Image 1: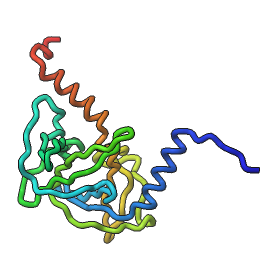
Image 2 (image 1 turned 90 degrees about the vertical axis):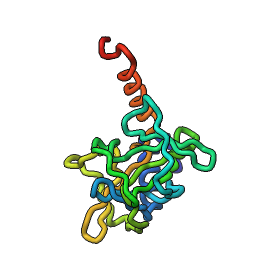
Image 3 (image 1 turned 135 degrees about the vertical axis):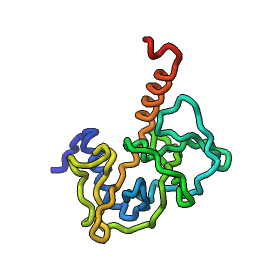
Image 4 (image 1 turned 90 degrees about the horizontal axis):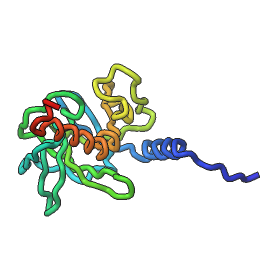
Length: 186
């Protein structure tokens, strides 16, 4: 009758992803290089004005620097550069979106530079298509889905992949190795 079936890590991850999409229907939409993107509001802590950024040497190119947010030092990521594009020009509308990223059992806050914040939209689950297998200008593992809004698509980002601390750390090690004196000779 009732059997206990062991869950594999993959089945648990798929179930968590499905549950997250079903409960998360509100998204913060923003622009990057003229393209609309969105992040689920459940991981967004706040939106602040772009200012007071301190550059840190030997960081991956996509890390613009750090900010001091009420005494906490937060890394700030340039999403456009993370997606392999050129960094957008800083304007009056440029913002830093503070996002909470789960790292193992802990949460870490990070800033994400966006060209402009548009609005918080409720996107029904029925209007969210799966990530395309090809044709996207960014890595498909960065895309949680494609939201249909007023006849246009908005790219819904998978924050845990885009802001993967492990992947960004590995990129930082590569960047620092490339900047070491004599690295070109090796």
